[in-house]
Length: 269
Image (cartoon, rainbow, N blue to C red; front, side, top):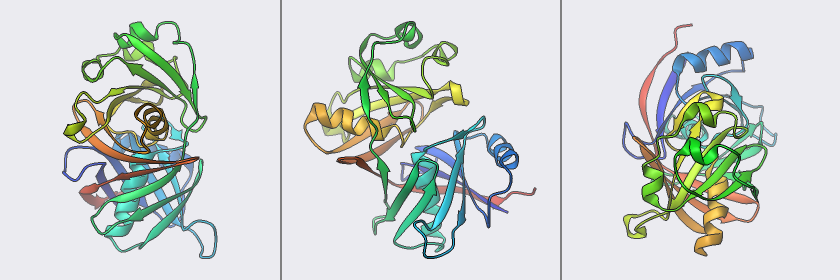
């Protein structure tokens, strides 16, 4: 059984967000999928299999962290689309059937992939007790996101505050359904990005996710409202970073990025 590891939202190996990708004939039992994801031990491992022609989707797609299955994942979807297109298993636009609905991914001649995801709702909420202490930074605002995401978007005062975060991960575990996305406007937009973010997800077995595509379905409307533009670029990450181009289209958000395969091997089980 072939397995790839793909760095997503980057055009260089060893940056962006790595995801495992397995193309299957059908889905084995959930226990096996979870054991493989735990063995791969990346923030997400994607499993996909082709669907019969003529339906609303071309491939079924699921995502597992080392600890659990999740409803939505951007970087592992990008990684899967990259594998399908670079191996010739798919061309043009690929339609995925996932727990969060139908998602599409379209490859461009420049090697980028653009994904069409549902835009997240944003609900202003008071900062939960202990959040500021757990992050160790002054909070400007807090917004809750849609059910398929389940993150808190936490605005900090500036880019330097986001970059300097060393949160108490244990304290963050019970403060949101999935995780906490800390964000701020870019200090200098001339550097090629409009906002920064970092994502912490200890509740689902991920201390820090380098580049979280699904979170950008909330970050896109959040920053578009503040910056007055629908087309933006976000930089996410701490030790590893990646770029996500976002385009807000009402109830849909387009996420664009590069990907590169760094491992192509066999799973001997």
